[in-house]
Structures are given as structure tokens and as C-alpha cells.
Image (cartoon, rainbow over all chains, first blue to last red; front, side, top):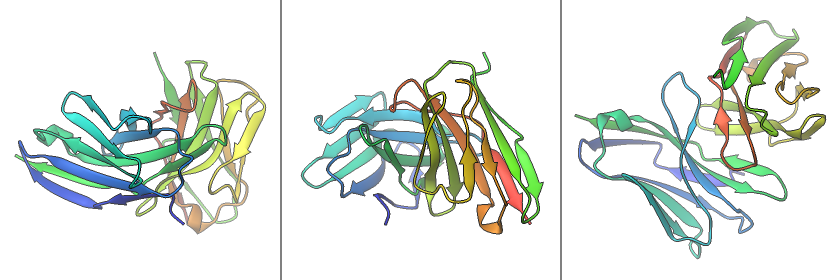
Length: 112
Length: 111
């Protein structure tokens, strides 16, 4: 059973457009929701993260929207650029029980 | 300024052989992790360690063994490799459970 469900699997966006990636979870015990960005041949790197007591967090062109009641969170990339083309993973962590779960990933292609 | 390194970067082995993947970090981070990455599954946690000599199972530990005698090293051993263990393996470290810093990965092919 997948703890964190991520969609879509792949996404094509025109340069300047908005990229939106969604994740859903069931376990209300999760404490922390990070997003990772991975370029081909590299390890994932933390992009932005949010805690469940916050509904939105923005860092530059990247925003996480968090809906606690719906148990969903999403990554929005504003003004998407070809350099944003990568695979994005959402994740969910439970601190006390040391549980770490990643979504299945979204491959983003930003066309020039 | 090496950060976190993994070796080897690529490995081909045969079914039944023992394989050890190495992970080394220079930050003295308490936490270290091993993940495998497969298409359609994202990253799945194999084992993690909260400190030297403290290890615990993750989501998919079967067929793997870890040890952590020193803070900076966290080797992962496949005791008897199987084809289903063909994957890309990532090591990560963190000060706490939050921001994990990933290594470059090891691509393992089991024939």
C-alpha cells in the first residue's frame, strides 16, 4: 500500500507556464512534507518543505499548498523554465516512528 | 568539501553473490539512510541509522544488511544478490529526520 500517492507521472509545460504536481496521503500522523528535485544521474535534493500546521509556503517560484482536511498537498512551479525539467518527488515523514515515505515521482518537461 | 559519497557508482554482479555498497559522509550527520529507486516506485527506504551502532529497518529491508560502526560510514550489503535487487541505490544523511542530503547513487545490475 503506497503511503503517498503522487500525480501525474509526467507533465509537459510550456516555458512561462505553471507546473502543478499533487500528492495525497492517508496517515494523519505525518509531521513533515518535503519536496525533492532530481536531475538525471544525480541524487534528489530538497526543494521546499512544509509542516501540517501551515497551509502554504512559498520560496521564489516554488509554492507548496497544503490541505489538511483533504489530506493533500501540491507543488506549484510558477513561470516554469526549461532548467526546471527534472523529476519531482513528494515525501511524508513521521518523526517519532522514523517513517519516511516518498511518492512515485513526476517527470516534468518544460518546453522552450 | 566532499559531502556525501557513494562507491562504486556502477556495479554488475551475478545472482547469489554478496555485494557491498559504500556510503561516506563528511558532515558528521547523525542520521543516515539507504533507499532504492525503481521506476514506478519512487524512493523506498531500506534501512536507516539514527547514530553509530543504531540501525533500524525501513520499508523494504529483506535481503539487505547494514552496519554503522563509525558515524561517517554506512555500508549496505546484499548478502545473496537477486535480480529483483537490480536498482539504483541512494545513500542520504541528515542532522535530524528532516532535510536529507543524498549521494550521487550506485547503479546495480544483478545478472
